[in-house]
Amino acid sequence: MILVFSDFQTAGPYSGAMRAAAMRHANPAGRDGGQAIAVVDLMVDAPDRDPMKAGCLLAACAGSFAAGDVGLCVIDPGVGSARRGVIVQCDDVWFVGPDNGLFEFVIRRARTVRMWQIDWKPAALSASFHGRDIFGPVAGMLAAGQDFAKQEMDVADRFADAKAWPDDIAEIIYCDGYGNAMTGVRAQQVEPGQNILEIGDLQIGRARTFSDVRRGAPLWYENAFGLVEIAVNGGRADRLSGVAIGASIGWGVGVKAE
Image (cartoon, rainbow, N blue to C red):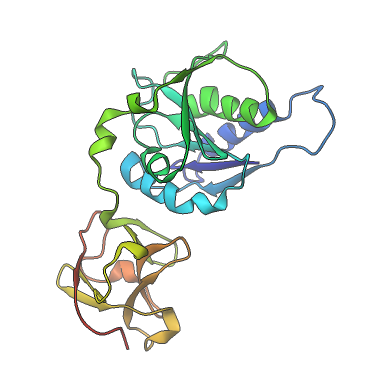
């Protein structure tokens, strides 16, 4: 299976064109029998043009991948520049995309890592849409077990700037359609007793789930992907004062939310 992770959104032709390229190369005409390789969307509204925040979210979503799956991952503000295209094998899962830090967090959290530079090029290559022209086809060929031009590289030679990024990002990195605000902090990294999340002028208590607090009350909790997330029971956290993408969070000691 190929899982798509991008910031393309659903408007316009971009997401569909990249998916089509991946599907076409994963299931070429004349391919031997067997079940067709599926291409599914994991996320198409990842933090746009922000490989650090998107990469943190990608690592949190890594549990959605099974052994042998290929992640087609494109958050690529440097498209058309000298940045490399890469394939990263983290344990038994493959990732295809730009070498701009997008894979930094999955690399750090994997037990074993290998990495290749993509040398394959299509006959026609646009300067601004490598998702369709390079990464989609390569993800398809990789999923189908086809050979193509690539060369293994030292993992230590990956995008250098990302190596200085923190292991957890203490700020809001994404707001979902319900208005819940995900942070880049893994809940398991929060120290025992640090039950009060501080953001702007707000102090928000911890709860297990929405219904553990009264309707209209804010809470923070460990979300389904293991991240600290802010929500409002029956409301929208993204309408709280100070809650916005990029807003920093801190911690205080107190009781759980009621």
